[in-house]
Length: 298
Ligand SMILES: [Zn+2]
Image (cartoon, rainbow, N blue to C red; front, top):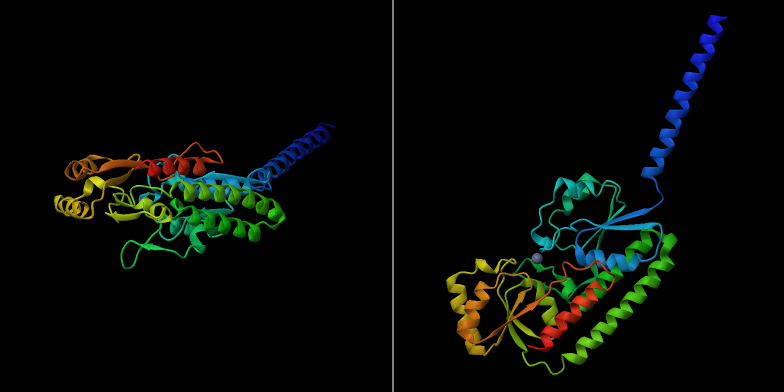
């Protein structure tokens, strides 16, 4: 009798253990395979583009890798915790063209992730030197639209269950961007300063788009690195060409710009590189409107 009870008890315990293991595994599967498409973007403007294209689509989740970082991604160092953000990712959306120097590391660590290079459709490059393309494309609205289109097209291919929604969102966003372009064209007709000195390479595409000629001093966003000789030369050039506006980024150090301004009588204007914001769908549009006001009031 005791033996029988022992066998029954043993069986019950075994059954409980089996049920527990099965239950745990079901839950684990749900965690990994939650039927959501996980998209990770590299940095802020790419994040805002992707948010707009995926807006309101329930089974798509977008997160931004460098969300705490407000500088330019082109000199960003990938951290271990950044890499962790790709553990559940299906898609990585980047700017491309060397802006994310760390991409290779992500691709090597997670070879199954699909990569969307948003800058692929852009052809109107500005070169930094003979070999390198300035990849701060998004400050031109035309380029930005091409990036939105590329992301949307590639999402269509990867996730064809949501094609119609992606298309609808894309069209809606591009319409807003076309409105922004119209506002630029209208307001920039009577702009006073058509030549500027720029100490930040992020704005080359914005200035070109706005029809403003720039003398650019390549600073890698570190304008305090300018040598005394460079400053002397640029002061001469500005005086010769009668350039009265100096462009820097909102967060840039202004010491050299001040020196140049004092010697030339030029004024300093601060534009925004759109690399940070309030995470809303219209963040890029609103920042670009602020930039337009700055340009108009030069
Ligand atoms: Zn940069």
